[in-house]
Structures are given as structure tokens and as C-alpha cells.
Amino acid sequence: MKNLVVLTGAGMSAESGLKTFRDMGGLWEEYDVTEVASPVAWDNNRALVLRFYNERRKQLYEVEPNNGHLGLAMLEKYFKVQIITQNVDDLHERAGSTNILHLHGELKKVRSTFDPLLVYELDGWELKEGDNCEKGSQLRPHIVWFGEAVPAIEEAVPIVQNADLFVIVGTSLNVYPAAGLVDYLSGEVPVYLIDPNPVNASLPNLKLIQEGAGKGVEVLAQLLLENDNKK
Ligand code: APR
Picture 1 (cartoon, rainbow, N blue to C red):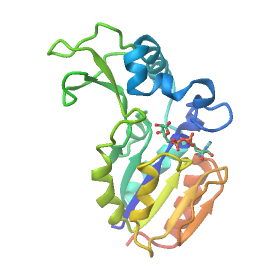
Picture 2 (picture 1 turned 60 degrees about the horizontal axis):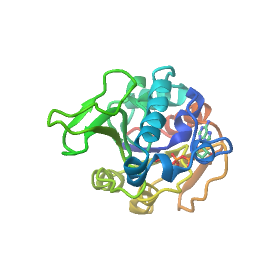
Picture 3 (picture 1 turned 30 degrees about the vertical axis):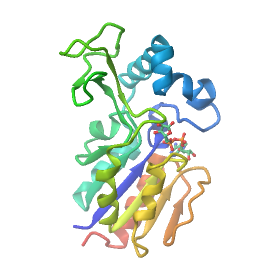
Picture 4 (picture 1 turned 180 degrees about the vertical axis):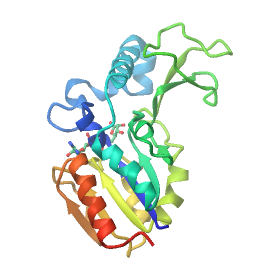
């Protein structure tokens, strides 16, 4: 089976009802990113940071995977699909995809501020001040904040280098190092970009599918399966 690697961003989950970051009405229009998603914010206004992620987490329990997530999971019948996502939601998992790498952390997980290796599934949606790890230190969202390292990028690079087919869904490709992953593609690899809006990506072998994630993944599946790319 061919290696089909998919890089997803916030637009992947837009049709599930989760806001993107940089579209009109997106989260970074409503919030100042440095005030809710940075180590400085955590030090200066912990209550606001906790509330921001608690709201996101609560909402995540109220939404479902959309046809785009489901379509990518279905493609596992024909390809070895590896999803690399910038999203912190669990909608790819819930749709049934089995190989998912989260670059920017996971909303339903929390970790110790004392030892980053102590990562836990949060029970319910609310993380509070005074919720501690087993060593007695405050728990924080298991999210990569602005200014922090992206450790999962090390794992992502060889996955991209080994791609036979590459798909980009719902990301403005504004945030590095995730946006730089496309530089590791070998020149012959066909790249499909699904986004209803123009995205600044100049890649050889780029095919634009100017649709939302649900319809876009349907079109992608037709193209891939028609071309008998499976073998
Ligand atoms: N289907 C597919 N794509 C969509 C849809 C949709 N229905 N609606 C919007 N989009 C596209 C937008 O056109 C845009 O290109 O999704 C993209 C969303 O871009 P951003 O909001 O910048 O989200 P993303 O690229 O995932 O952001 C990267 O920035 O703040 C951080 O950590 C956060 O992981 C996030 C990172």
C-alpha cells in the first residue's frame, strides 16, 4: 500500500463547529494569542489561560467528526494513511483514523508543570488551579504554546520524507515548524491541497481542491481511487 500522509489544520474541524484561528471571526480575532497561549500568559494570568482551554475542551465534548474526518479514516482501506495534525481536538481519533501524530498537543490531556513526561487524560472538561500531578505540582494544558518547542516535529519529518502522496487540509500554513514540513517532500510526490480559500503554497505537483473539508475529501478520494494510486 502507498503511504498517504495528510497534514491537517483548524479548517479540518471547521465543519464540526470548531472555530479556526485566522479566518474572519476566528479565535485569534476574539483573543490575543499572547494572553492565552503562551508561557508568559500562564505565569501572568493563569485563570484566563485555564478558562480559554476549558471552554475549548467543553465545546469539544459537544461536537462530532465531520465527513472530512470520516473520509480520511475510510481511506485506510486503500492506503497506509498517516495523519499529522496541528489540531488539538480528537476528531480524527473519533472518526476512526488509527495513525495520528499531534504536533501541537491534545486538548483532552494535561501535564505536570514539574515533569513534562507526566501526562494524563483529564477527567471531564475542567482543569482548575490546584489540580496537581502525582508529585504535587500544578497541571497545565498539554498544548504547545507560542514560543515553545514542538518535539513531535522530529517524528513528523521522516513520515513526510517517506510520503508517496501528500494531502494538506485546512491549514493557512502560517505557523512553523509545521508549515515547513512540506519542504521535506521529494519533488515527485503529488500534493493535494483542500481549502475553500486561497492558501499561499507553491509546491511542484500541487493540485488544488477548493472545497471545504467534507466535500474536499470526497473529491480527493475519487481522484486517488480513480487514478488507481492504491498499489
Ligand atoms: N474546510 C477546510 N478548510 C477550511 C474550512 C473548511 N470548512 N474553513 C476554513 N478553512 C481553512 C482556512 O481557509 C485556512 O486556510 O482553514 C485554514 C485555517 O487556518 P488557521 O486558522 O491559520 O489554522 P491553522 O493553520 O491550523 O493554524 C496553525 O496556529 O494558533 C495556532 O496552534 C494553533 O495549530 C494552530 C496553528
